Length: 158
Image 1 (cartoon, rainbow, N blue to C red):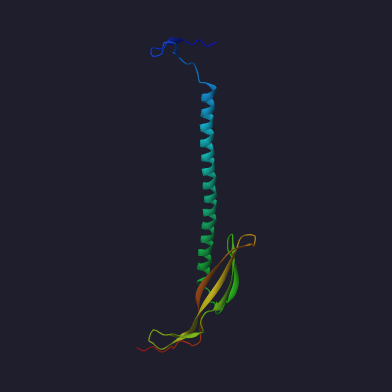
Image 2 (tube, rainbow, N blue to C red):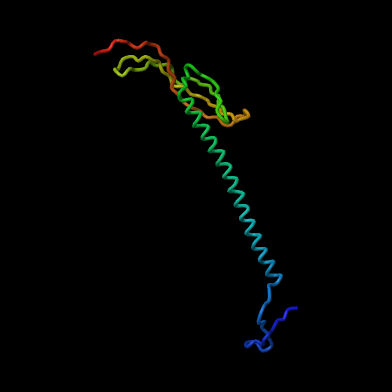
């Protein structure tokens, strides 16, 4: 049993003031739990959104790295020789088809004459597939294609 002491109030003649308190009331506990639960709801919703954004960023980073690797591989391909093809990488694969954007043109040598090649610009449609073969994303790429039509001259000018 609690021993609570009271004293007479100086301001009000018929009022008493409690001198000490040995705990907290049920109302104070309910208020504290309400504040705690509101804070927890806000915190957990923020954590959920942050986790969702992190997973989206990781997928975007993975797609960007796959795109860079595909462009790096395709930059050494000649669309005249390989107008379409497939290539597997670690974790994904690509498939491409190409269409000429311009007609074949003669190249120019450094001296200003006809070059050894005919060149043309090609538009590639690159499809990237995930590990299990589902289409992941598609992107366009423009590459220069070339075909050697002349042999180099063996004579040296000097």
